[in-house]
Image (tube, rainbow, N blue to C red; front, side, top):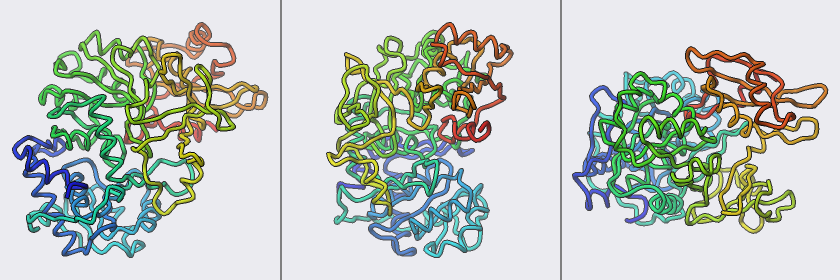
Length: 510
């Protein structure tokens, strides 16, 4: 069984190598590949014999990052089952909808979400067994670790599993309707691993993962490729800047991935000045353009180089990469397509555009997902007749084939007939020394239709007026791009993956 059973192979090739550190637990347990493989076999046997889980069945998880998440993923791989990674930020009523759509037989959950589970179970008849990771659980739930240790460690093999079978469901954060579960196949994971190894990682590397596992960034960007390559993943329960810095130092991490808001928070951590980050070969930033000031701060203070990238749940997720030597020269660019990814920019008629022309980014390649679970029509809406996936991102590329995301289609707003791209304005705002975090949104206006509003969090002890910020922007941008107002906030709404939730800001100021 070569598809789906990473740990069985790793237990042969590198049984004693450190695979996982669960730094979210007080005793910080360490696990070798042999130990992880035994855990996955035990859980797979229990799922199969006690819960009747087999090929194609779903196992749901509502949990913080920890070794249990990986136990569930690899156990499902051995069985040919599908791990449904539910977003724990959702309301329990929303979870009921998603669970009834995906119909898991088992739900694994963190103690923090036991009230959610208690409420949704009566409305989720497909769920026959529940496992709680901590605490006393709810109803008839069984303790995860106790159940796992009672399981049979004998190898579990599903030879019928095919590369096109779905390994996991990762749910996209749609703005309306039921979240869409992207079907992540074993083929997709393999191709993404190859792309990641070509561009980023080396066998035996170590990283600290700060993204939630229900997010493609947590499970698929580096965790899976690194474990396939025999490296070490240090898991944290939630992003804590001070803890993350200490873990990067203690475990001599080779690389680290985050989003700009996380990097901003790292520079404000109390141990920033003292921590030794000399082991880092590079840091990767994605999710939003990385301000040049952060690249400069990490370089000057810690001699750390930045790669930048771009990914999405449905594709890759590793799609583009910008090399460290281009971080400042090509600031704002997502780089060039990864090796086995084809990319175009097309106009409204789906015709390819040339350099320096703004259009929609479309993608094609073997690391594309297999569609959305129970929503075949949704994929028909975003894949054209030639097989190109339409991302909904507005982009352009230059004469050297470096791509830049101008903005999300949904984030762009039109003011007085002009297209306004918030990302461009935010990059300018970050150049102001007082700005810690910012987001620009379009708000209704009687005269212009929509105008810009800058939502700003200032650095500690910094001060600047709205008029001064707007004047600063007028020195850098065309007048029609400058926001009409500024809102100073104590904090911006941020998702579990560290991205700024502009939808919440738009709702607040609509």
